[in-house]
Length: 111
Image 1: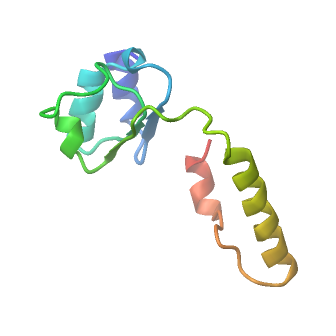
Image 2: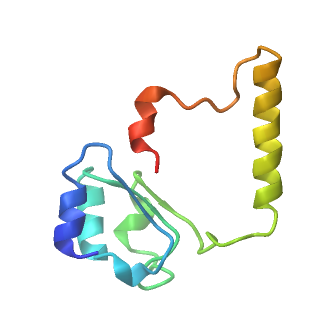
């Protein structure tokens, strides 16, 4: 993602960039500048270089979540997702509130 694409993403209030592909697909300098300025939030499973040097500003940026390149399958997520879905359906059927509701106003932020 070039500097211009990262800049375009920052035009939308509340924008969140999620990168689980490769660190090099994002202009990390532009992303760092935008994140430090509070114009974008990011979840980065990959960076360039990987791992970031300890002094890199993204480590201390409050609106950036860095994960240790673990976005791939861990082998148990489908079972956990099914269990969660079934539990939510059971709560709904019993007339209880959802544990993880999705509010209409949040739908614009979901993929």
